[in-house]
Length: 506
Image (cartoon, rainbow, N blue to C red; front, side):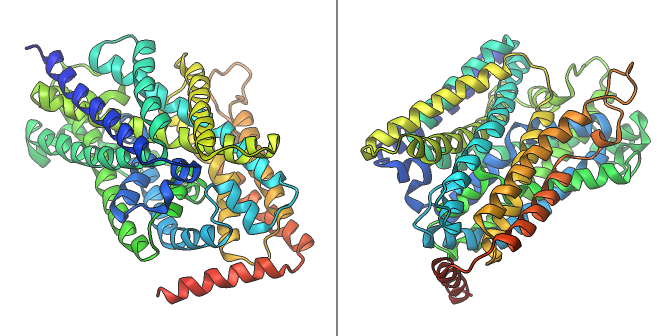
C-alpha cells in the first residue's frame, strides 16, 4: 500500500469514530438543556480535556509551532500568558460559575446567566451578548475552517476548498446531531490524541536530529537568537503576548464547560487534569517547532513550504505512514474540537438568547433542539464562506476573536461572580465598549503610518487589542454600575447563597 493509503485508513477510522460518538450522543439528547449543556453531567476528565481541546484548536499544532519556527522562542510568551490565564480561570471562575449559574434559574448559556444574575428585565443584555457571540464566533469558526483546508492541502495535496468542505461536513454532522454531549465526548478523545501526538513528534524528532546537543547546535546555526525568550522582543510585544491570558475569563466555549461539570468537588480534579494536559501540550508544540528548525537545517533537500505545517511535515517524515496518519488525525482533532464547541455556543446564542426573545413563543423540547441544529448548519455555512478565500493566518483570525470575547465578556464575568454591585446597565455598557474597542483598535492598527507602506507600522497595531478592550470594559462597567446601583433583595439572596455553597465545599 502507498503512504497515502495508510494515512487515509487512519483518518477514516478517526472520522468514523467521531460520527459514532455523535450518533451515541444523539440518542441521549432529549431537550435543549441536554443539547446545549449535557444536563450538567460531565465528569472531571471529560470536562477538563473538553475545555482544553476546544480552547487550543488548530493553532496549537499549526499556528503556534509555525510562529516559533519563524521567530524562535520569543513567541513562547503567548503560551506563558495562556497557561497563567487558564490556571486563574480554573481556580477562580470555574467553581463559582458552576454554582452561580445553577442558583440563577439554572442558566444554560452565558447570556442567560448574565440576564438572570442581574435581573435584567429589558432583555437588552441577553440580546447584545448573543449578537457579540455570533459576530466573533463566526470569525473563530472561520479560522478553524481555514485550518481544515490547510490540513488537507498540506497532508494530501488536496485542493484547499475541497479540504475545507470535507472537514466542515464531518464536524457539522456530529455537532448538529449530538449537541453538547457529542462535542464533549469527541473533545475528550481529541484531547488525548492531541497531547500524545505533541509528545511523540518532538520525542522521535530529537533522535532524528542527533540528540539535544546537536539539535541546539543546528538551531543556533540558523539563528543564535532562536533559543532566546527576549532577543528581538519589545516590551510592548511581550506584554501583548502575555495578555492573551486575559482572554480566558470571557471565552464562552471554554467557561460553559465549567457550568456543565457534575459537582463542585469535581471542579478541583478537572483543574489538575486540565492544567497538566495544557502544559504538556504547549511544551510539545514549542519542542516540535525547535526540532523542525534543526531537522530542516540538517536536511536542506527537505523543504518546508509553509511554517504552519511544520508539525504535519515532521510527522510524515518521522513515522510509518499508518502512525503518521493517526498523528495527522490528531491535527484534524484539534481543528474539529474547537469548531464544534464554537458552533454549539453560537447555536445556543441564536436560539436560546435571540430566537426565544424575538419570537416569544414556546416550542416543544424536541422543537428547540431541531432549531439548534438548524442554527449550527446556518452558522457553519457563513463561516465557510468567510474562510473560502484564505486571506489571513490561523493565528491572526484566532487572535482577533479571542480578543473580542476576552474584552467584551471577561471583566463582566469576573465582576458578576465577585462583585455584588454590578448592574445590568454597567454590564451592557462595558460589554459594548469592550467589543467596539477591539474592532476599532484592530481597524486603526492595520492602517500604516506611512501611506506608501504595505504592512502595519503604527504603534496601535503593535499593541494587542485585548489590552485596551479589557481594561476599558472593566472601567466603564465599574463606573456605570456605581452610578446605577440599587439594592435588590433577590440578587443579594442569590449572591449570598452562592458564597455559602462555595464555602461549604472548602
